Length: 141
Image (cartoon, rainbow, N blue to C red; front, top):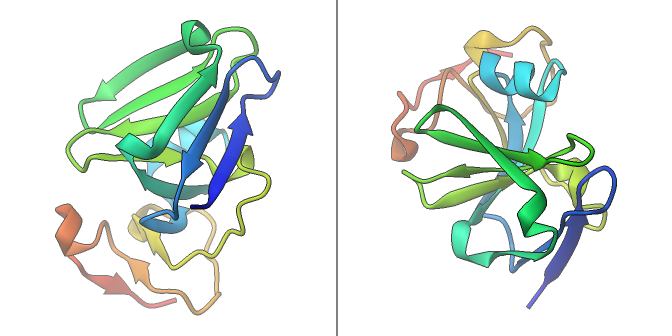
């Protein structure tokens, strides 16, 4: 089974995920943009049960703007590590924190909120896929 190890910015929080992500792509929603301090967030969604914090669990802080996303970061460096999505049973491990993961994005989500149009041929979801509670609508590039 594939294992990918990652860490926060300072390395205090160490973690790993096993297997392959359920999905990879780019999120353009306002919340992710503000949380990441960037125009887009590269995500990798994993079943929640394949994430294991190897060290520094006591240094992980959490913030819930909504019950949809439980955002977690390192108390020492402030580095964002992952976001739990309890309703989906998934965790978003930020792609930048998994240096050996080959990032293969499949779609863009919340593209209606985009501030950085990207022409890459990938589907541009208006919000989310229907199976995740969204409209399932796509937008043109």
